[in-house]
Length: 92
Image: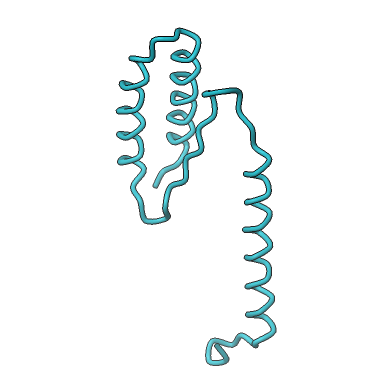
């Protein structure tokens, strides 16, 4: 680390900041609540391709179209559509 111009204190501080950010994210995810089947949690690994995830969501959309309950079907389809629209905002 010293060869890159960082002191041990700076490295430790950076690590502590990253840990704090992760803990804050976990806390916000724990507080998230959805109404029945209307919430989707989608975690994409850093190296994964958005196109693959989009295809998976399209497949899920097709599967969800077969849900018999009209209310549940519309709720699930709406949630999937929302996630698909959010994914379009990302370039990679």
